[in-house]
Amino acid sequence: MTRSDGSALRAQLVSSGVQGRDAQHGTIPLALMDMTELRDTERALRSAAAAAELAEQQERRKLASDLHDDAGQLISLASIKLRALGDGLVGEKDAGIREVEEILTEVRRRISSLSFQLSPPLLHDVGLVAAAQWLAEDLERRYGLVVRVADREELQLEEVPCIALFRALRELLINVTKHAEVREARVRIWHEGGMARVAVEDAGVGFGPEASRQGFGLLALRERLGQLGGTLEIGSVMGAGTRAIASVPLTSDTADVRGGLPS
Image (tube, rainbow, N blue to C red; front, top):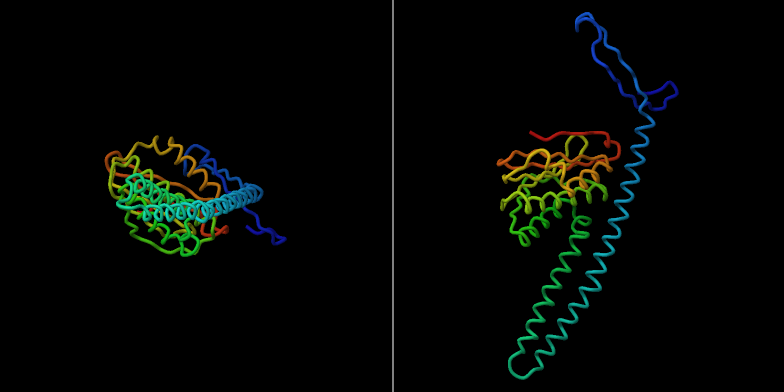
């Protein structure tokens, strides 16, 4: 609403239900509550949460860069020197040298994967869809889970909500690998009602309503999204699979918008 001086008033209309002998002849008490201060406080909290998320991501990016540039390069240098040492030996390479070479190769691969997980360059350079496709390939390689990124709409998102959705997607897909007892999952990326959304669906064993509220990872994810004005909605049927949708506002102007599970 707009006050006479032109300032904005955020209000909520509350009803306590019909009072009187019946619905046809009773009265409906109404109250208009000024929610401006509460909404301003919520926006300030969301702004603080976004700043904290951004600071955390900057630290993640720095750590990823240090892992790749420092530790990764040292491992590569050690591999080169070890290879040169092996080439200088007369006859066949010592089995111990070959074993160390294999270990160094695996360590370098794991460092590269870890640095990418901490802060995927694709997420910043190309967008959420490309990062989701990389995540799908990584999970198939590490866990054998085949992830199909079906409906994908590249969203124009600021850094914080983009990071939040990617982390939510990773958490939800890892949950599938741990609990769903399936080898396949489906991902959707789209926007609706002022919200950017990612959905993870599987046809696994499912779980009861209490399980979706008790898992620490899901609780932390729901809280993190809520701090940004978003939601986490989970629908699951025992023996018939699970669908989870993580949502964040496209912009701060739509942070009060909430949406439900798509049909």
